[in-house]
Amino acid sequence: MRLGIIGATGWLGSALGRAVLERGLVAGPELVLLNRSGVRLDYHGRTDVAWASDVSDLVARVEVVVVAVRPEDYGDLALHAPGRLVLSFMAGIPMAALSGAGGRIVRAMPNAAAGHGQSYTPWLAAADVTQADRVVVRAVLATIGTQDEIGTEAQIDSLTALSGSGAAYPALMAAGMLAHARASGLPEPVARRAVEAVVCQAAELLRGRIETAADLVETYRAYRGTTAAGLEVAEANGFSGSIAQALDAATRKAAHMGRDKDA
Ligand SMILES: NC(=O)C1=CN([C@@H]2O[C@H](COP(=O)(O)OP(=O)(O)OC[C@H]3O[C@@H](n4cnc5c(N)ncnc54)[C@H](OP(=O)(O)O)[C@@H]3O)[C@@H](O)[C@H]2O)C=CC1
Ligand SMILES: O=C(O)[C@@H]1CCC=N1
Image 1 (cartoon, protein in one colour):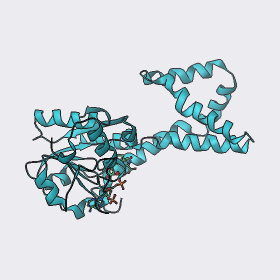
Image 2 (image 1 turned 60 degrees about the vertical axis):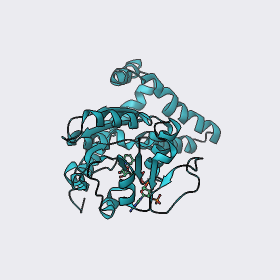
Image 3 (image 1 turned 180 degrees about the vertical axis):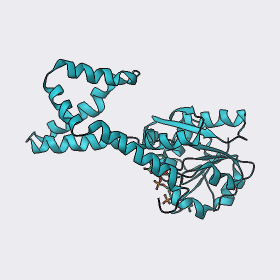
C-alpha cells in the first residue's frame, strides 16, 4: 500500500508513521511523508522512507492520504486528492469541508495512546467509500490500536470530546492527587508511586468491564469507610457534573470549530 502522511512528524502523524512501518503494513519506500519543517534524515530509525516536496507531490505518489495537521492549518494545504482515499484525523473539520478535497473521505478520531499502539479510533465514512476502502482503513488504524466504524458526524464530535481527549482527564486527576500528596508532606517518590497506583494500576480493575464502573463506586460507598467519605465530598463539589460539563463543552467545540471561525 502506498500511504502518504501530511503532518508526518507531529504527535499523531509520527505515531502512525512509526506504527505502519513497525507492523510492516507499509514498506519504507511506499510511505510518503510531508511536514512543515522539512525532511528528517532518520525517521523512526529508517532512512528508506520517501519525502514529498509538497501536497500535490504527495497526492500523486500514493493511494491513501492521511491528513494529520492541526485543523487551523488544513485550509493552507489546499488539498486536492481526487480518486484517493483520504483519512482525516482532524478534529472539527466536517465531512462537508473535507469533501472539497475531492477524494473518498473518512474521518477518524484517534487519541494520544496511538503513540503506544493503544488508541481507540472511531471513524466515519462518506457515502462513496467502498468496502475495499473500509478494509484499508481498518488495517491502517489497527496499527495504532482498536477501531470502530460509526454512523454520524455528531457521534464523531462526541467521541472527539471523549476518547479523543486521551489521557487528559486522568492526567488532570493525577495532577490534583499529586499536588495534594505533596502538600500532605508525603515523600516525593512515595507520592508518585501512590498516584500512579491509582490512575494507572487500580483502574485496571475496570478493563473489559467498564460498564461496571458505577457499581464499583457504589461498592465503595456501601463500605461506608474513608473512600465513601471522600466520594461524598467529591460529588457534593460537582465531580460527575464537572465531567459532564467538560465533555459537553468539548463536544460543542468539536461541532463548531470547523464551521464557525470564532469557535
Ligand atoms: N494530539 C492528539 O491527541 C489528537 C489530535 N487529533 C487531531 O490530529 C491532528 C494532528 O494533531 P497533532 O498530531 O497533535 O498535531 P501536531 O501539531 O503535533 O502536528 C502537526 C503536524 O502537521 C505538520 N504541518 C503543519 N502545517 C503543515 C503544512 N502546511 N504542510 C505539511 N505539514 C504541516 C507539522 O509539521 P512540523 O512537524 O514540521 O511542524 C506537524 O508534523 C489535529 O488536526 C488534531 O485535531 C485528533 C485526536 C487526538
Ligand atoms: O484537543 C484537541 O484538540 C485534540 C483533537 C481531538 C482531541 N484532542
